[in-house]
Length: 438
Image (cartoon, rainbow, N blue to C red; front, side):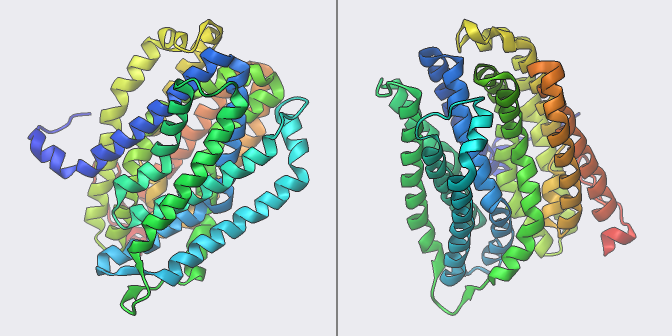
């Protein structure tokens, strides 16, 4: 893929928010990576599996609670920027209240039936306080996820992403690095309590973006929920692969193997810096362009997101693939069996990243149902195939299965964007069709 020659200063100015987003995401991934390194070196693969199972389950449950609402907020609240007004405070408070209500429902379900689920994942005895700390982390992730979306919708991209992804792992990293954690249980509690404090800080920094004045953006909750329902399925798919692969590895193979899998997946997940960093900046821009009816601008944004993804992804992916062994040695000699798993995971993640933001474009241009249908199909395929892949192929089978499913999902999305909007996400061109005009 050829990239035109551009003056570096012009490139920096044009994509400053994207570069800052990548830097923040990079910092968050680096902090999370180092947390995993220290847990692995201090406490071993089983502790890594323990920590990952609790935190990943909590984060996935927060997505189940509000995954669609945060995307809907990004789309709907972005109109305030276009209209040069603040968000109606009542609308903001309703979004937060509904998010906490959905989270509360999951809390009740976890208290009632969480023990059997945890026993299955841990293949036996549930660690002490596992469900309680999981619930606290889930609530904190709900707050940071939702309020991070509010901040980004108002173009507070940098602070919004710091709230959502950077501050918590950085503080936890410092806690471990200073030798204050005698065991993985204490690391989990530090993660939970830090998350709650960051969530509270996010609330108070979001309030100034809203107002009780008459000249504000009013967004009825029913409009948020109408958009959120189909996007909910999309959000679940975007987050289910990592969690389900980890949970399957633990339930079928054991917590020790889950620790190995988590390290491989996390290293490959470095490429998600590009996906999440760029798309968190581009998603409100997609929404704004669509709201203004500016399809050429939307097509250019889609092409920019896709090309930047490939530009940043390829060098990192090649380095990880070539130096998989030395990278895993950072965690300790026990992690070398995951070398092939890491290579498969990074190839899958690289292809997924470079195939562009098609699912996000569908979500931001009113094609939520198409996204939902694709999501249901791919999620069902993943849920059915991963346990068989684990049983007959071990960790390598899980990595291969997950890579194949997410790549197929993105390829179908590319075709759907072309058919429904006429946009080619690689070139930025638009082919006018009856469907695209509609």
